[in-house]
Image 1 (cartoon, protein in one colour):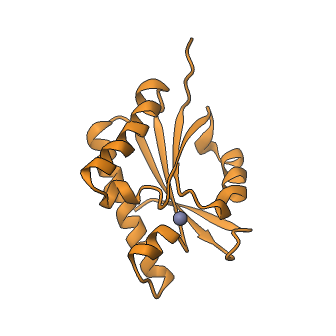
Image 2: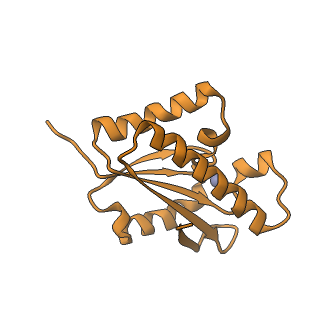
Length: 143
Ligand SMILES: [Zn+2]
């Protein structure tokens, strides 16, 4: 029996994002046709800067979505005030954190495209408006 879905969301595991991500995935056209979820600390951070072993295990999750479920679009979602990034970096300014994370998302995109040149990859930044994640502003990164 076929069980396909169109999209894969790679997100950070942070529980504070759950309500807003839930709302976003229901409202946004990006998730039409259903979506798989890879939820790990720092989202695509491990793909950008992890060991070969970690990268390969990450790519195996992506393979299930793309090869088995036929996902055509991958949404990479990072967010401000991320604990995984706080462990590795000391950001004094939100702008710096955002720049670094976008750099990593772009690196992750290249790594995925090497293996899956046909998938569409969308990078999304989530700015937490409060520490609890009651409101998150979602921004598609186009540059
Ligand atoms: Zn996080």
